[in-house]
Picture 1: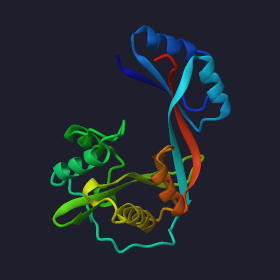
Picture 2: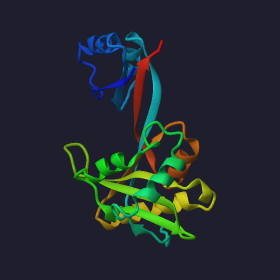
Picture 3: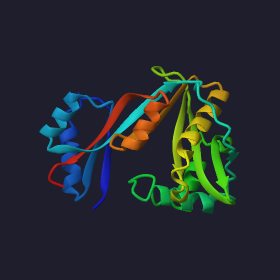
Picture 4: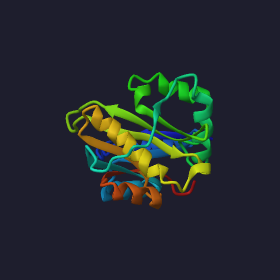
Length: 220
């Protein structure tokens, strides 16, 4: 059984959503409907289709530059050189995460092949000769509804270095980098139930811009 994502955004007009859910279930798979910018009417529609919320992400934003600064020493990621160390830290830090945990060299190579990838915005921090944490940033071009956005794409601290304030410092370092590139809006995604992370980002001036919700069959 596989999870098959139905990514229809916030559109409520499609009458074939039920048919798509039924088709996926008939094939023995689990449909997952992602709604970006979910509203109460999406929850009502999901309930009518027998779907229940299983995951919720906050997209948080704040203006750049940040008032706070950091002198944390970082360096750019080196493709092919830092892969093994980075994968080890990432997978230890995100052992619990459905998307970010369990990455392989092939997954990392796939991200490096994306047109947005920039090693200069992939910041690594080392201590005692080890990779202690990282802040991987991403730049989104302007759209009809948004200005260019500077994203904290992935950020983590190795469990051995938790409690040293590195999470906040790395976030600030990433935002400094993005502001230095001329970005005026910073953004990130965080699990809505990750209270420590949400609290950190709120303390840095982020606010919830929208909530993205995944719905799956209630009887799955």
